[in-house]
Length: 251
Image (cartoon, rainbow, N blue to C red; front, side, top):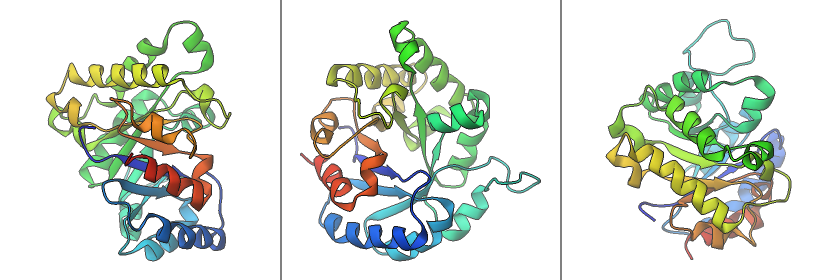
């Protein structure tokens, strides 16, 4: 791996504050000795402050699941980067397939979000990936190219390594299906090659795999040449399984 792997747990719309506290208290001792991997959790907005307080001084960072590109304004239901920074958030997921599919986020919208996150000092995790129909139609590479080129349109080439890319095949998210090792490596390597066309920082850009990552399959996925970590969904809701995935990044 070209850099320290990143394993992030996307809790999605799960966990009350009390439930989140139970999870973080079970997780922290399990990952306390895992040198050589960066670990992040992405709780819902309501639990951000509590998780930041509970994780203080640990190796677990707290990321948000979404952000708006404006600092303030009449955007009911949204949250701004200054608000996230105010509570101590250190990173943010941008463009998750569920945001794209259910809430209409476009490539153009994400192109405005990415530089805002970077300028604020947040670690962005930009999500890309194809649907099953797109893969069957042979459109995986053209889709990944379009998503990456659009999202990075306003990012200086020297800042590419400040962004983590999460390749998440939509057909593998929450389905129990996982890309084969060959499929995961091919897609992540292609994503890196697209970035390399514009920036010498492509080799230092972390590319994560996401999509039904479990304690059982994490080590072999994370050992792939162009996989530099994981974005974990359902398995991150268990301290035991998420800690095992984090440990898998060190094997």
